[in-house]
Amino acid sequence: MAKQIRKQNNIKHGTIELVLLLLLQNGQKYGYQLSQELEEISDGEYELKEATMYPTLYRMTQNGYLDSEQRKVGVRRTRVYYEITSEGYKYLAHLKQEYTLITGAIDKIMEHTEKKQDGGEHFETESHI
Image 1 (cartoon, rainbow, N blue to C red):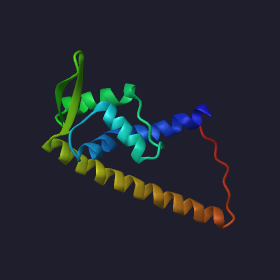
Image 2 (cartoon, rainbow, N blue to C red; image 1 turned 135 degrees about the horizontal axis):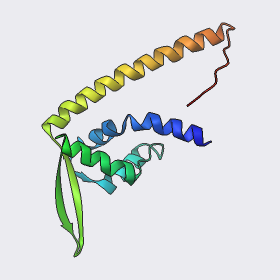
Image 3 (tube, helix red, strand yellow; image 1 turned 180 degrees about the vertical axis):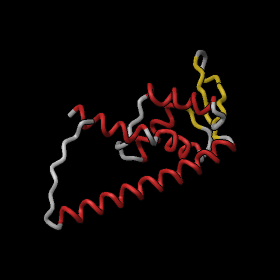
Image 4 (spheres, helix red, strand yellow; image 1 turned 90 degrees about the vertical axis):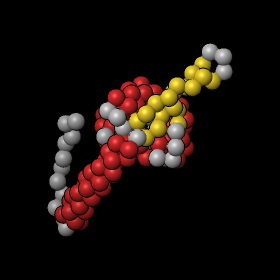
């Protein structure tokens, strides 16, 4: 079971920036808001832990893809709101194109291998991941 979860996380890891930028296209959001919206939209299938999300948001801010603004909420709390920059929109376009190419290639590979299996050729594979 642990290997299955790790594999799923490996695939998800490559999409975190894409997903966060997609959500931020619709306006400023703070971290918790992003994670809740992501979980809601994906029907709970795409959960993003704070320990992964915040370093990613910070890195994207450092790279110029996001702007951040601290706002005081209540007496002692502040929230950091993130907003996509023009460089972020360019990066998002690149990520979307890359994602489309990769998923298209994977779909072709899956289709090809399913055809081979349907033709009576069955291969035993062992995962070493």
